Length: 222
Image (tube, rainbow, N blue to C red; front, side, top):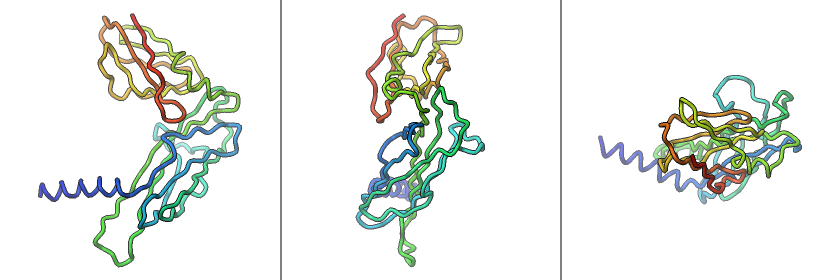
């Protein structure tokens, strides 16, 4: 039984590694001045096409209606080809003075022969952040937002305050050299507290920029 389970797990990883379905980024920035935002999906598989389904969710998993539509929501990506996923903003209620964040879901299902029952069908799911940036907000300021973070100590730990209109997506955070697991993001005009002892000496941070890269490390000393 143990060997069967291990074989199944290995089959999943091998299949995903060979599947060749990739998105053209780790996040999608939607500039409010544009009619739509696009991201590419590439199928480098030499044998099979994929059926792709895409949709947008709220970041908090609430059931509130999202103000975006995807065109097309369902399509086929032929083998060794590329397709564009188009996201359009159809609402009018998102804040104009700060960014808003959502999740873009992309599911890919491989095609199989009608009479082939021997292959395992595994859905490949990608989830990336969709960030809506209203007209008037700057890409340069967004990528520099980490340098405007403010830090303070309170009775509960270390507080990071974000005085900007942009989401700061933390990539890595260390307190006195100790890595903090999944530091997450700090929303615009908000703060976040990280519990810690009162005698810390330093905090280092890096964030993820618009291109999915990592910013230069920022050091706070006490």
